[in-house]
Image (cartoon, rainbow, N blue to C red; front, side, top):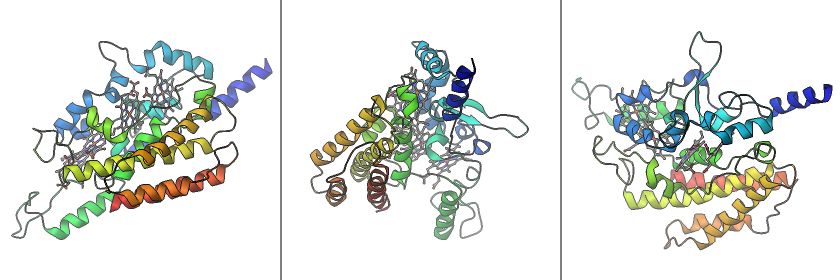
Length: 320
Ligand code: HEC
Ligand code: HEC
Ligand code: HEC
Ligand code: HEC
């Protein structure tokens, strides 16, 4: 009897939620809807929305039989508390409430950052040169620089930084949690392709057309250039998170072998990527630092160092 309760205690501790954002700063998709109605409507058509609300063909995630099986294996009671919420839900902690609460599936702030400190400032153009209310076109240049910097400093993840957005996708989609996979039987991550998946149904580039057309790139970007960048950064981040994921493995199993496959596939994808010369030095630099890499349990430092190297390359490309 004693043994059993000890086991439960340990597993509860290991699989406790580790949400990285501050739930008191989450405003939720409804707070974006007045100004970004087309983006919200697009999101409502995605798996990210339906995971919480359910759809005609599938119940919400916390009611799915597969979910119950995983919870049982992990000795957990609810998918709305603990580790599952990190990836399946957005949690908000309202002032005066005892606990954070799951309010939706992965949403705007899962990818753009918790907005409490930037929602009020990121879209405010200030006064124009004659002292009237500025618009996007008449905003004073220095005001724009300050506004965007202010938003970034307050945790906003904007479209100018592809690496930071893409990183979020891979942090969830590589499922970097050994116990969840090996004990819980959770699938060991998606074969995610950032740029392709954006094009499928995730993108919501409506600023340029004021809501009428879902453009191939955000407002300030040339479409082919942006898409090339998205493709290469996606491949690099896949490799980075494969390496980080493997570094966390403590034993051979479904988890480590999925991470190994991810690393090998990512390296292969980089080698086979036909960049027609575009961004080719970033690609060859990344391949070079993975040369001779030892993928084995316990090579934590060298795997993480390689991941850091790949990250630097991806960040440089992102900001170039
Ligand atoms: C009061 C209106 C308003 C609200 C509310 C609002 N936005 Fe915005 N948002 C704007 C405007 C205006 C812009 C365009 C800013 C510009 O021209 O640089 C913008 C731009 C953006 C951008 C693109 C920024 C970039 O440089 O890449 C993102 C991402 C964004 N908003 C996300 C959100 C999210 C997420 C929410 C809800 C948490 C939200 N916004 C709520 C008005 C708003
Ligand atoms: C690190 C992120 C992460 C965590 C933590 C996580 N999941 Fe998932 N889960 C995912 C992703 C990503 C998918 C989608 C994979 C795919 O099919 O591409 C998924 C898919 C699933 C699926 C199959 C698809 C579906 O929704 O029916 C189930 C069931 C599931 N998760 C249950 C759970 C449960 C229960 C927990 C908590 C014990 C949990 N997950 C924790 C990321 C996570
Ligand atoms: C907070 C974690 C999280 C983030 C960030 C995230 N996803 Fe997901 N995503 C999920 C989960 C969980 C599911 C599974 C939903 C379900 O059960 O149906 C999913 C499902 C999807 C699906 C549906 C297909 C499938 O395999 O289930 C696509 C496409 C997708 N995500 C793309 C993306 C892209 C592209 C990004 C980054 C721009 C991203 N996601 C960021 C957690 C996340
Ligand atoms: C799964 C991650 C993800 C989610 C969820 C998400 N975004 Fe985005 N968002 C992105 C990415 C990635 C881009 C840049 C797309 C590209 O490069 O083509 C972007 C771009 C934008 C832009 C700039 C569009 C333009 O035309 O310039 C705005 C505004 C925005 N998002 C607002 C929102 C709002 C509001 C929500 C919630 C309804 C939301 N996003 C949900 C990942 C996400």
